[in-house]
Image (cartoon, rainbow, N blue to C red):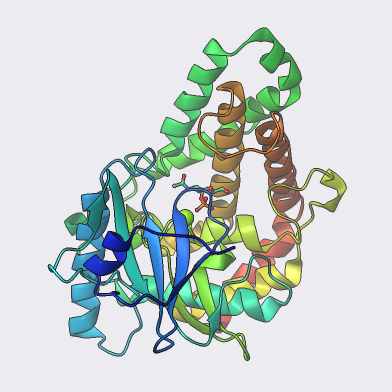
Length: 361
Ligand code: GN1
Ligand code: MG
């Protein structure tokens, strides 16, 4: 579909030619993303406007990315970090009719996958996210601002769930009665999470916080990892966020939208490849405590996502885009099943982790 974008936005970036082809791309539900092709010279860019209902402080995003880009450029000049380009007036975003826009370089020869079909893809993507963390190991994460306050704070997510429950209609609570019960059964994960806060061997790091497969660009022919994209949630966090979200999104063949729960199973070969790829970068950096928490990272993120979907269902779908009224409840069921599957396979998965760590000693 051919779309039109206000000419002033394009002009702000010096794209004055008439022949700009515009296509909507990406599967993210938060921001609007477009591929621009300048047909006069073949140059490609990614144009995006920021959803300020979710990201209430776009300046914080721009500041964070600029600080990290500067550090990487100084210390690792050959590393590909696709930060937004500045406007002709040297601004990091362009404000147009109340919307914040930014332009990124398009990375030629790459693809963003929506689903993984080989363990190698899991290895390559996990390696890319691990590499970013490794390169930023010496970067002081205190220099970055949270772009969404409490984004991966499980205690906050549990409070939000309880608040939604206290306000929900009887009809909604009746429909979700089993999932509400399950949310309380797995409160043990929250208790374990709370104990971590007092642990000095569990540092803050710069985390990506959205490590789904479509945020790792792979070479379109070889499927080798090239770089990571979607830097909006690049902010201080704990390592369990990135690895956990990879477990949530790489291990099952089907996504969070799958309603047939018998399809929600764990692909052990993908787990092994993902751990291998991640630890090939972070194996020597993680602390002893972090290494003990590798499997926990999956439980933490999957449980948090189940809570977030259930909360949104009880709140009558105010956050996640849905195509039918019970979709967030179905997503919560899907995520609780995934959590149960991870736990059911726990011993085998932990053995794979242990074998990997022993090999690296
Ligand atoms: C949102 O739309 P997307 O995939 O970029 C959400 C993530 C969730 C994900 C679940 C800012 O990300 O935290 O894991 O949905 N991002 C935000 O599909 O809330
Ligand atoms: Mg995202």
